[in-house]
Length: 272
Image (cartoon, rainbow, N blue to C red; front, side, top):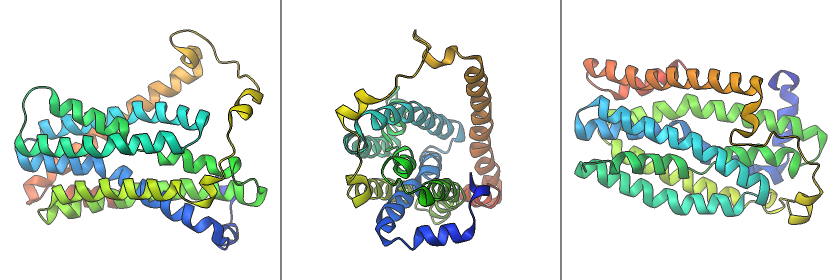
């Protein structure tokens, strides 16, 4: 989408002061998206000394994120973003606090893994709501495509900055502070996003849902996955996710020999 948008289109978008709060809050809420899994990795490794255990917690969290994003995205599409994202924040904060306690006190049994899964599942999916603003709330054709392109670019920027920030906290010996900071920023950005004027104008109502054309989605336990093309896409994405997840653990583990696993976060930012 970005190749259809010129710099002057971004300048025109950013000249609209009414959009600034939504753009700023959504960016703040999504910056920790690529930071928090590494923050969990660094903190768990610091407390346990084991990258295997830290990687297990990080992977459980990412698996929860994959599941939770689907559920939250469906709810946002159906009833709007306010209730799903507030509910996510209400669960996300205590789950993260409990995970930090479990790691710090080195709880045994399945509890740390289950808490990491819960943290990922309840991570507020602001990205889905912020993308939908452009077209559902903002309908000016000049801004819809540019806004969607901006959302994609800012999300990519979070994947560049997030690992480096998490690594910086770890190198300073404050990996727990990095996890707390990323959690706080995600919650604050989400709540700020929901209070912006654009999001409060979200038009979705029960009547509009009933007026939508019915999609020809296959029924059954697998739903849309009965389409061969979608199964191929999901399979390819799963393989890519496994590779990226392995790299996310392997690079910090390799950097431990250089004196600090946090260097791995900086490398991940340098080579996104």
